[in-house]
Image (cartoon, rainbow, N blue to C red):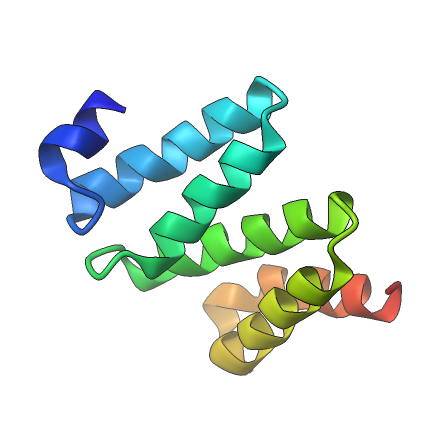
Amino acid sequence: QQAIDTLGIDSQGGAWAAFQLAWTCRGMQDDARARAVFDSVDRSTQATEGLRLEARWNAAKLALAAGDATRARAGFESLLRECGDREDYRHIVADVQARLRGM
């Protein structure tokens, strides 16, 4: 949290620190906070594209696990639009497609 406060979420370092904080929250079973932090990473103006997409993917998975199918579907569908056929995001697309089929 200190790195985020010092660097700001709208810096590459701050976005990376927030991504790591989200995983820490997840490990502590605080999924609501993890999802909120992943959402903030996705909105960061300086996060790398890959970090933003990974954060959105994780936020959508947590929304689905929490029973928020509407939010999960919106996140998953936006990932499909943004990732498209790009090779470097194939793992996200495959997972998202499988999750959408199961909803």
